Amino acid sequence: MSPNAKKNILYSLVLLGLVLIVYLYRNSTGSTATSEEAARKNGLISLQGEFLEQPYLFLYHPERATVKAKLDSLLTHQSKLYEMDSPGSALYQLNRQDTIPKPSKDLLALLRMVSQDSKNAENSWDPSSGMLYEGWNFSSSRATIKDSVDISALLENVGMSNFILSDTLIRKAKSGLKVNLSDYGQTLALAQVALLLQKLGIQNFFLQVGKYTLAKGVNERQELWKLKTKYPDSLGVAQEGWVALQNRGAATAGDFTQSYKQDSLRKAWVLDPRTGYPVNHGLLQTTVLAKTPKEAAILAQSLLVRGWQDAIRIDSARKDIEMILIYNEKGKGLSQYVSPELKSFLSFPIQ
Image (cartoon, rainbow, N blue to C red; front, side, top):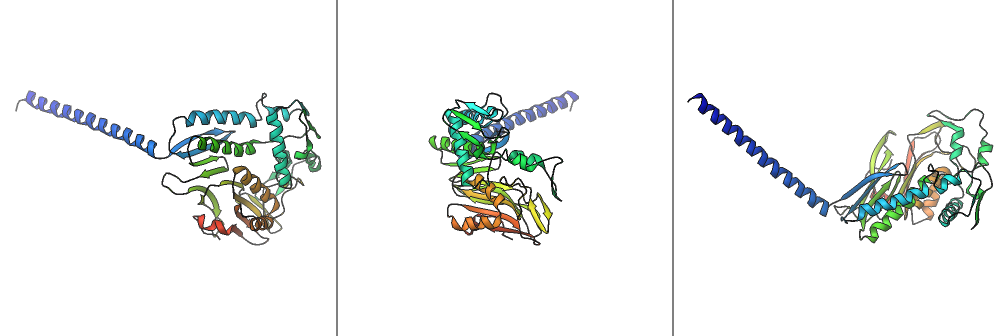
């Protein structure tokens, strides 16, 4: 065979190979696009982003054409209500002025709701208590007051009751009073997102912003939505598990891996807003399930201040909540308490 004939055969084989590659590529991309389109139509829709400096994850099904645009608009509006770093926001002005003449109806309604929620929690939850943490250092070995800090002086500027509200004026009883409603706003925004989805005919969704969650219906596999949580194994090492959510809001407060030991008792890095001092019990982490994420969040933080014995008593008295507590008693290792009706919804054993 002549050299030219060999060249022609080689070029033909190369050309045939290129044609085959193009054919396979076109078929593979076409099938991928088709499968992705089918999955999006019949499966799970996922939206991710950031709200009030916390990541959010919204999962839902089925798809609706206008959802993303409407959610973006809603979250933009909600963020303006609770942001504190923008000079144009109401909370920015509130934290820097002793009086707010002619306050907006939205700001008045918000402060009245927050004040009532704090009162209902016996002031063990108070979003004006953030400045107390500026006076303390926490480590794995101890909690110490920072040099030259007067806790009693800080405490004078804490308490939602120090906001004096009327239809025409907001006045502070103490000029140093400040409020942080970022977490509170996250829970309220979740409820607003849920209302929007339901108005659009979506009854199956899992909504999460930061530490707060709201779930309704089932996932794309027709199973209950599941919340990832952290729990201790028999050696006290942190492990990941799941809690199935049945049309519930959920919130976690505290972290059992962040604590210090004092007088044979492991304590949380948590201050009591009523005293300005660290809590004096062994409750380290609370997860609460309730009808709304706001209720779950307030109760989770409140119980972390009040202690595990109060928490168990409250759980026994109420049928509208469930909880997971991680705590220790003096001289003992970590223990867990789970509401009896919640145990069958956990993926992990109770130590």
